[in-house]
Picture 1 (cartoon, rainbow, N blue to C red):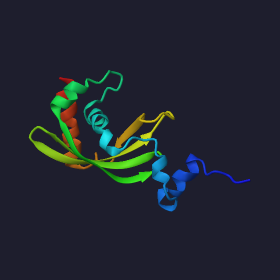
Picture 2: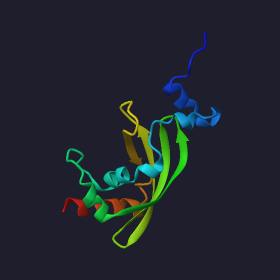
Picture 3: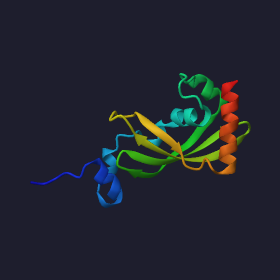
Length: 128
């Protein structure tokens, strides 16, 4: 009897060794995560319902691109503009709850001074 490598096993070996692995990715394509990235950058109180129109009035997200794909996860990049400047953000999305397009975002370069300060300014502007 053959055994299928479950999600934990696939995550451990990565997609590079399995042809077509990324095609089984339940996380959305990077191009569809702009509003999620806006929410992640600007909202510190996750208990409140996000105001997507307000987020879109504060910033724009462009050049969404996939850097790397794994089983149910992607590393993405995007250019985020607000306050007259643009920063390049690198972030990780991972499918959650076993439901397609429900995902968690982690900004990977938040410790970069420019990105961290930019996110703080977005949080302040969104809160007021």
